[in-house]
Image (cartoon, rainbow, N blue to C red; front, side, top):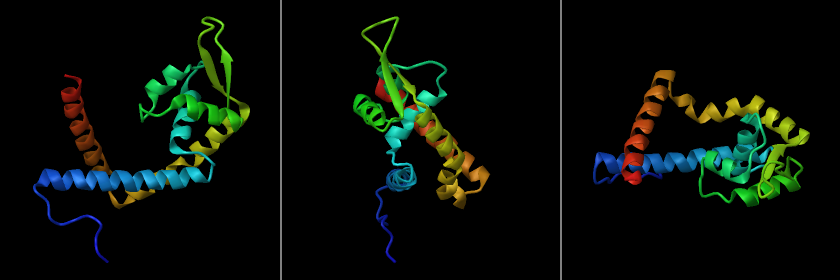
Length: 153
């Protein structure tokens, strides 16, 4: 079987970048498939997780700031979660311009159910031992940290 990743790289950095891209796509598809059993997209799950971890209601801006994908249309995603009965929205008593979002009982129960099964998402990483997984994490964090500094300047 022919590999999807080409063998002709301009440099070791090019090879690393291509491998990161293919791995990101592969992992995203794995997560998407996992979330289908709960009738959620990964972005919708991210919102439920953010609200679940908060000890108080959150508004759309607070949720968007905590999301993995900052460009996601959080308002639209929240509306879909509301239609599914997983979140509820109500006007803030402190600032009537803001809408506060909380989990419903159904949303909380689904989030708890996902948390029980979430270890399954580690399965693609099982080819690595714990030390290798730690090294990989450190290298990826180092790369993001250095490049995020450049983007901010």
